[in-house]
Image 1: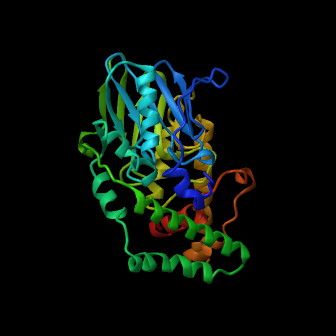
Image 2: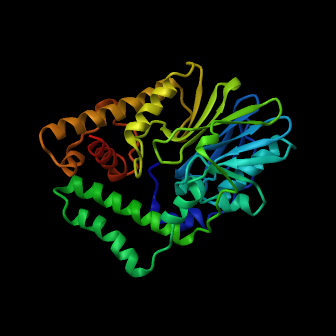
Image 3: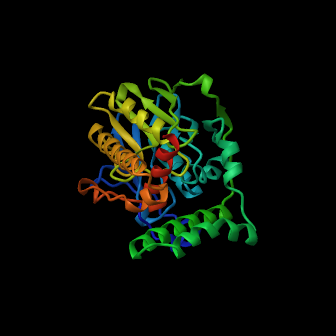
Length: 344
C-alpha cells in the first residue's frame, strides 16, 4: 500500500482508463494494471488492487456469480474502480447485478460508489455508513483545513529524531491525501441500509448463496461476505495481508476477537483481504501475531507509566514482520497504541 500520494490527482482523477484484456498467462479475467480480476472458485472472482499502478480501486473486491444474479464486493476508491467490477460482472455473466456491498465506510471502499450510482446499481452497506461518510468526508475551507492539519504539523516539528520526523511526515502526508480525496469526490450513499439486527442475511443468487455478516472491529460498520460452499470470505479491512493493520477509528480489542473467529474457519478457506494478496489461515495468524505484539508492547509501556506517545515512538517492528507494509506510523502503530491504552 506504499504509494506516491503526491501523484494523487494524476492517479485517481486524470488516469487513463485502460481497456479490459484477457490474460491467459496470469489466469486473469480482466487485468487493468491497477487491479486484476481472477477466479478463486466456480462463480467466485477476486479483484486484487495494485496501488503501485494506480489508485482507481485502491481496495480489493470481487464478483460473485450466480445463475440468476451477480453480487459485487466493494465500492472502491474511484468510479473507474467501480467500472472495472461492472465490466467483470458483464464479462462473466448475462445475469443482472443484484448490487454492490460496501464492507465499511472508509473512503477507499466507498468513494467509487458514484460509478455504481450512475448506472442504478443498488449499494448495500451497514446502516451507519451514510451518516459516517457525511460526518467524516465534508470538504473544508482554507481556515478549517489549516486547523485540521495543525496538530499533525506540530508532530513533525516536535519529533525527537530523524526517524520520528520521517514517521510523522508520513502521517501528515496521509492526512493531506485524505483531504485531497475529499475535495475531489462526488459522494454516493448506500441505497440499501442494513441494520445489525437483520444480520447475518443471506442472498440467493441462484445456485449460489452468499451470507453478509456484521463484525465490527476495524470500523463500526464492518461487513464480511461469506461464500460458504466455496470456502471463500471477503473480509474487507478486518484482514490486511502482509501488512500492518490500519487503525484510524478501530476497536482494536474487538478486532482481535474477529481474527479468532476467522481462525476458526476450515483450513482450506480463502480470505480476500481489504488490501494485499488473497490469504489463508497462515496469513490471518500473522495479522493476529502482529496485533498481539502491539498489545504486549502497549501493556509493557503502561506498566512503566509511559505515555501513549512514548509507546508509539518506541515500538520496534519484530524481525518476522520487517517486510510487511506500514501505511504510515500514526495510522498503524500509533492507532494501535491509542486503542490499547484506551481499552486498559
